[in-house]
Image (cartoon, rainbow, N blue to C red):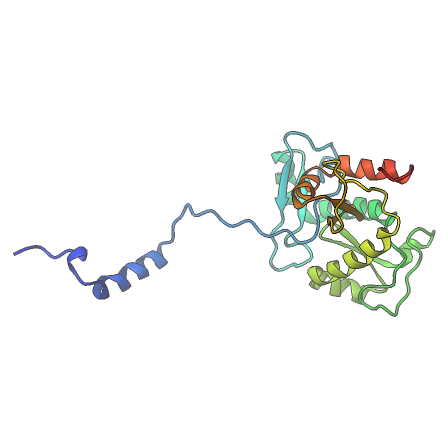
Length: 236
């Protein structure tokens, strides 16, 4: 008598058992999907741990912390793998250090707008001596100024929503005197509807999404070009 095999049986008999077996023993080498970045590219030219310049050994990490929306999805950069290990041993310490550096960097470009959470609440002048009377929080590598601690908590619970509001306000405020007429990456003239983003709290416009991605990989030259052109007439 011919022996019975799974192949000789109708699928209705063996398929449920096979699916159950696969569910119980998923592939061990299946790659874990990287978390999606929330907010903007790392704006600093230095490692969050060592403070050294980012170079050829740079490591880019998208942080994972599903229990903390203010951290989950944030991009952080390191000068090398050892600094990643050091960072993971004391995230709070190094994120505080990063927040302070990003706050100082982006406060210079923050527009004099009201609290994004409570639009009726005015804030101190971001460029004035009492700038830090407002409550500051950094999420997604972007400074957000609010009127109170309660608003800070709201921003940290839902960074995507409030970052969208800040982006809209910052871009509107910086559009009037945007210093470049050409793409800072390709040098081509900007189209009527350019690709744009915030880097280091500054509006940056590009001729295409490819140049935008290139600037996010290496922001330093683009930020330097913006700084030079703010001190001279716009490029033609």
